[in-house]
Length: 320
Figure 1: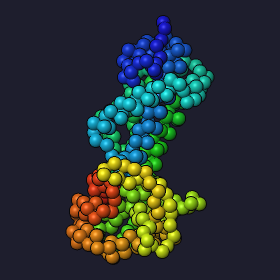
Figure 2: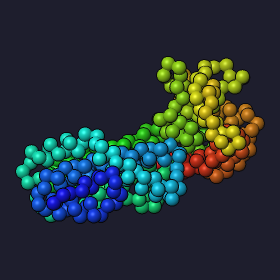
Figure 3: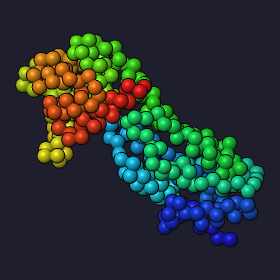
Figure 4: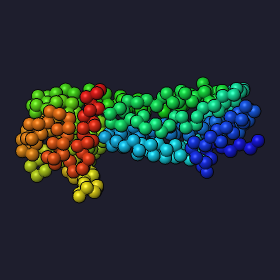
């Protein structure tokens, strides 16, 4: 029988007919089914990489609504299928490995798993800032039995969970690295240390988007504090996003640079204490919403959604 590939670019990602065709061909130990199964796993692997990238973006404070998450997940499924059809080399490697094992397609479960199981669009399942620790490894394990040579297939696929685990480790590492400095700033300002850590996390993308000097070294500026005319220290000049009239624009701006993170947190505390704009924040910023909204009203950032983003990241730090 002629087998229509499950990753046919002209078919939808949730093509049940393609899956049934693959099942029937697998029962006959068809070489075409072996190739299609390898492509299926390659598509699943690509989808999980995309999903982990979305999670990392969410952890940096760029969270989507549930509807946007649903449509993004559906788009990623289709994109993964298209990329797998073109191939990134994983399917070929798996195919060579499975062909060396006799009876690689024996058994009725050769293609019995849902090809979209690792990327099912379940509203609320895809984590945002509040839960970057969600793991994608479960979906891989559940679908790894789709071929008789699952032992060989699981090894490359399980690596797809590494980016998601990396997000958790990165968040925890960031919190541990700045915790002491945040406590010192908290003692000076009277603000909860979790609020201070949350703002540093939002401004720096949990330390992944730190402002760099011209030589590539870090400026230690985790708070995105700009260098005005009164600043006499080192300066890092980089391209940044500013909102003018609610419209994002890319501009070159000068930012303060420090010799250490301790110096950065100390300067942040000094700025809040000395700048009259932030006196209301110090006076009434003891709740997450009060602090976040106070910072936006004081003009800390031009992003019209800054208060919401800041509140979400702060709640993430408080739950860790």
